[in-house]
Length: 204
Image 1 (tube, rainbow, N blue to C red):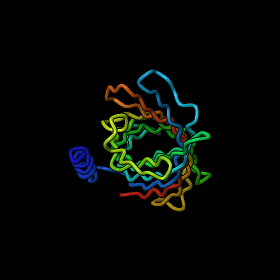
Image 2 (image 1 turned 60 degrees about the vertical axis):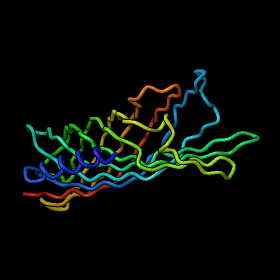
Image 3 (image 1 turned 30 degrees about the vertical axis):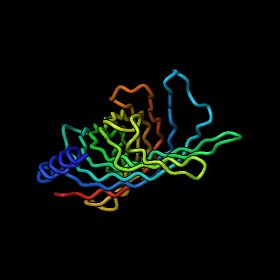
């Protein structure tokens, strides 16, 4: 965990001087758990939950209309569930390092609005988590199916509204699949819909 945090901070610091823009996004995650137990059975009683998302990053231009972003993310992947006998919930926080390629397909001088699509990956690791079952609380950072490095693939689209040449407000939607890279007898992946609001600041 400490190694992942150190890598994130070092990459962010080294790239700051060459970045064109800095951004901050905040929003909500709407997450579904894809869980399979040791017998290969899924739990139909798990329902999707919502949680917060935060992203702080930098943007670098490549060629006309195409740029690359790199950022630090903090995501909550939550869920609830139960049956006639039991009730349970999961609340988790994952820290990640994210890289995206963004293509701006609509940008004109006549309007301050720019529309874009993006795609990328995120490497993330659980930093805190709790499971509640019938009033009892368990630490999820000690559970094998939650531990280890996760790889999240992301596609999305968004809009930026430029208030002036140096400042913009943004709205974006991302769809992602978060896959555990560690082999376990129990498997857990996350399917996530993310809605974000953001600010974009020019560093030039």
